[in-house]
Image 1 (cartoon, rainbow, N blue to C red):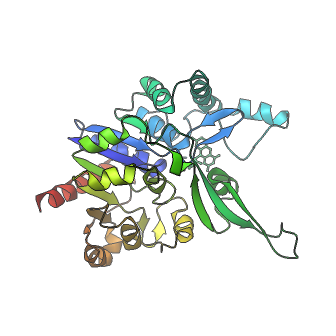
Image 2 (cartoon, protein in one colour; image 1 turned 180 degrees about the vertical axis):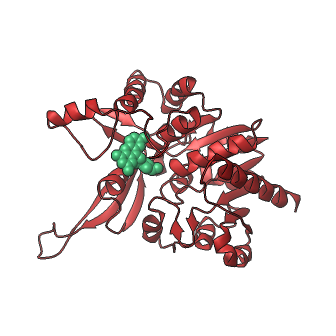
Image 3 (cartoon, rainbow, N blue to C red; image 1 turned 90 degrees about the vertical axis):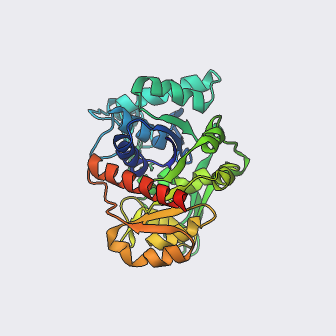
Length: 327
Ligand code: FO1
């Protein structure tokens, strides 16, 4: 079975670990979000690609869900001693090595997709990991920062990098708009459209529908290829009981005018894209609403408490795909 998964960071990576356990013989292609990528200290950092690679390759810091296990921060401390920041982004020594290799290869002319393949040669994630695009796309968030404007009490409206919104500000101010800068001009990376066209099933893990899956779908050609693939497309809700399982999905959903509920996210993707949608058992009452929108829906436990729980979710997603295929 050929499975294509559109993945963000932690939620996508943990779901993939479960999917691999559920169907060890499947041929899995992961299309990774690169809108979270950021240039720091002259290096290109790709948090979502690395989170998938480290999680599936056994190198992730399990408690955090991002970054390396057994990490130290000497390099960051030395940079800070020179007054070189930002200090708010936690890059560890082991993680730095990945960014140095990546940046060196990009500088030598390799596209990000080839660099990612080379990094995966070490980590052997057991999936084919492809960035959504080789072109530069950066998600920016429009915010009003309190009290920093000229008029008394008025804030300053500005666009900041997604990582600054999430890590430095901890999503503490409303996201007024979310813009995947560069997405309109970006082309899908080699292999992305081919994998979609050859897939037997396409899955949206419980990743952020705006800044993760939404950014991948913003690359021209990807949404269309999925809608036209003619195979079941099944998603898992990242919202359980009206709140995101983790992260700031509620903040960025508000920015695009979508309520933070499992059925609203399904409707946001729409029946033109989604064939099936899994909601958590606490949201069982909304199954009818999702089905009324033309999307087959089931309520199953959606908390990824461990790899077995994630594997059960993956099996449910594939069972729903089989149901959709049978109609
Ligand atoms: N998340 C944090 O909350 N704080 C950090 O300092 C931080 C550093 C970091 C470094 C490398 C990396 O690959 C990921 C990192 N993350 C950090 C996670 C990241 O900001 C987001 O969770 C993802 O981009 C969202 O998918």
